[in-house]
Image (cartoon, rainbow, N blue to C red; front, side):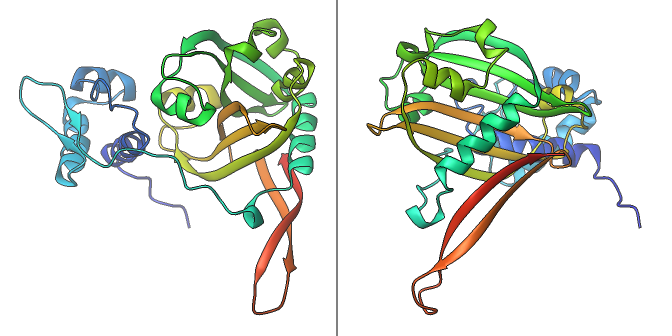
Length: 263
């Protein structure tokens, strides 16, 4: 049985709600109605209905003549997972490099920017410190696979740029820059595609994506890369084997043999 598609206003509501939870509009507020109409390709009544639903849930404040402001909870980082839930680093990194070597990449943006509060906190920098922001789309023969944004401290990233990022996985570039990777902390969740992700990944606005956030540390426990990745679930699979450690009552599981596969 085919699924009934979500109404367009509800798709827009879901996308904006996720962006609000991410803190996307904390500084400047939401785009105006005309901008949202152009962004999603819909009529004003559709945009207004989506905004009304957000306002009814107490997520935004709408005042005539003023910019719509978020009033929901401030987005924060997910709590650090205990060691027993962390992926085996060696298997994770090996699979990421292997995937990088067997796919093609298009570099959309490489720029040195000032660290926002979230980037500075993740990379343990000062607010406004220079970081390299790189945006890339990775593809298989079937089409786009992932949309990846990485943030790397400028002291490390100045050793590579657009040319190198178009040819090698960034983990390889980090190692070639003298970084000795020590560990990684990764979270995987779900995300709905906004208009930018939908365009680059060749999916419809509101489509479900796998959202990955990965923070890489060197052997001295210094963060060296923060990654935001969005993957098409029909072309990307993340697998791991779990082994129970300790007594039956303990029920502690340790992940091994991490495998990130593209279809």
